[in-house]
Image 1 (cartoon, rainbow, N blue to C red):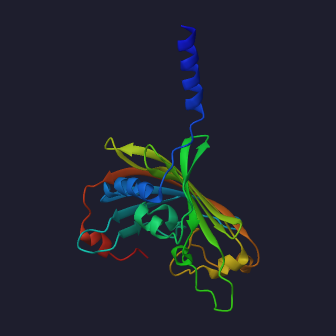
Image 2 (cartoon, rainbow, N blue to C red):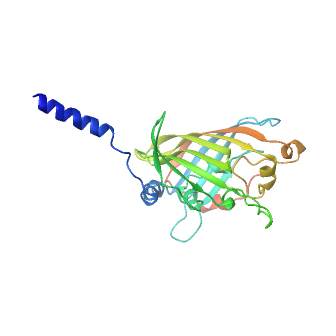
Length: 256
């Protein structure tokens, strides 16, 4: 009996020191894309709250219509409807992981990390500046080092946290809490975007295309003379998933 207990004890000890599972970039991509493929279209109401110095905007509700690219070769379609002006971080509204992964120029070996909310896989690498809507750097200027890290839930295969750095400075963090719909589809219920944009970086954002943070105007000279930090919180309600969206929705003009 003592020998049996010793063997059991050894097995338990050995199991506790087993190395973490080795993940490959391809295996993670397959799992994430499989979850994304199940969502063909959705409409959702998003309530947006903004906290930023010298900026005031009451809570706004916008209606988001999204349709994933089909076999006809059409690109993803997204339509936002709201009354009046709204600050919208486009980064948090498109849940298509295909676009997110295609932004990477190189990827470090993925690794498991233990976080307060559970086990996550960290997926990090250099990203294309064009993916963040930066204007081109002059040829005689040094291109900044842009990196992104994703924290992936290996049970639901969703990105729960994203972080973007310019050289060593963290410029954007996005954290999402998910709900389950139709028993197996996961979509955000709340997303929090925190951003810090330095003056040089802010001047480089292409306002016509929208950058990593909220779409803001630079009429105030203070916006280009110091760092701007802020937070945008988005709450998602009234999802309609895979019900189809009429073509006319995406053809309508934006309200003035």
